[in-house]
Length: 87
Image 1 (cartoon, rainbow, N blue to C red):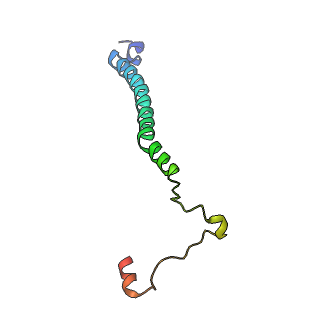
Image 2 (cartoon, one colour; image 1 turned 90 degrees about the vertical axis):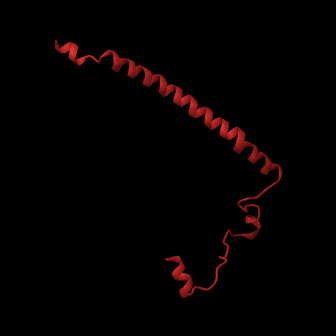
């Protein structure tokens, strides 16, 4: 065999490379479609319902009037039993 025959990829390798290129494009389109459907079916309607219901999940409405976003922790005094549970 000559060097040209040994260095050129075989028919199987060329078919595999072609199929991988096509599959990569299909994978991109499939991923895009899954993301669009996830947003359209799950995230979008939930956001619309929360917007209409005027829900403030992050508690941002009262920040200007309060002057600070600091909140004291709702914890008990530290003791030995609580420290044992945390370790």
